[in-house]
Amino acid sequence: MTATLSYDILPFCINVSRYTEHSTVGLAQQWDQLDQLCMRMQHNLEQQIEARNRSGVSEDALREFSMMF
Image (cartoon, rainbow, N blue to C red; front, side, top):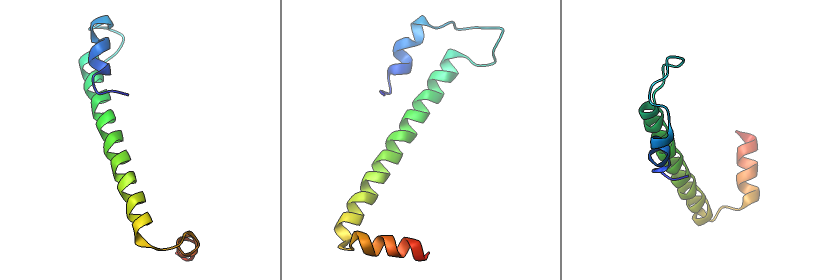
């Protein structure tokens, strides 16, 4: 998924449709926002995994802790 995907397909879309309240520009903007959110979430998850791996706490200890709380 690339941030420019929505703009690459923009020339092929119908710009105005009386059957929907959505526009191709608005949908392209929403797609880019979703793409950016996914990238931030992936980066955050990667940081959490790295932090967990650096903590020195065993998998069993983490599993036991999560089961207790």
